[in-house]
Amino acid sequence: MVPKFPVLNSLRIKNTTNPFEMRPLAVVAAIISVNQKILCVQRGKGKHPYLDYKYEFPGGKVELGETEEQAIIREIKEELDLEISVVKKFLSVQYSYPDISITLHSFLCKCKNPCIKLTEHLNYKWLSKSELKQLEWAAADEPIVRKLEEMEISELS
Image 1 (spheres, helix red, strand yellow):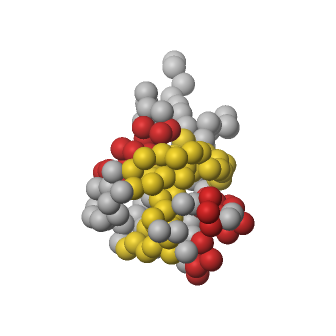
Image 2 (tube, rainbow, N blue to C red):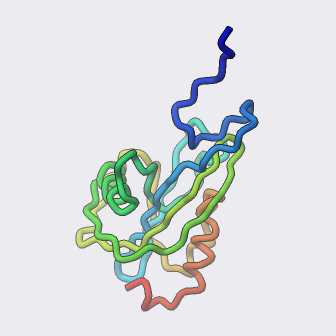
């Protein structure tokens, strides 16, 4: 008899019934700045209640065969209909939510035409780095916010 194991969509997703540690899911986030303001987007209600209505830097999962830079450009086009360019990698954060572990790779990005069309988020705000702490952030994004607050404003331009 062959033992039955749960079927996982991805080996990167943490399965609490499986005793083996899974690799974290690779996720990317864009820190898009225009005129020294940073784009923050608000999630809606979803399948992860601990993320409902929290703010985050826009982005998403890295698909098989994609580089992190390709993933962030694709995700921002899909989610916000924005054309961006990646300036440089900013910070990678490992975080374990109740049902999934992620590695969030953030990138400083630019866009020429900041006209946003929301397709997945409830709201967006352009904030100065000192205003970022006013928002309720997704937990994985909080270290990114803290590092941004420590930066010189010229580093974002």
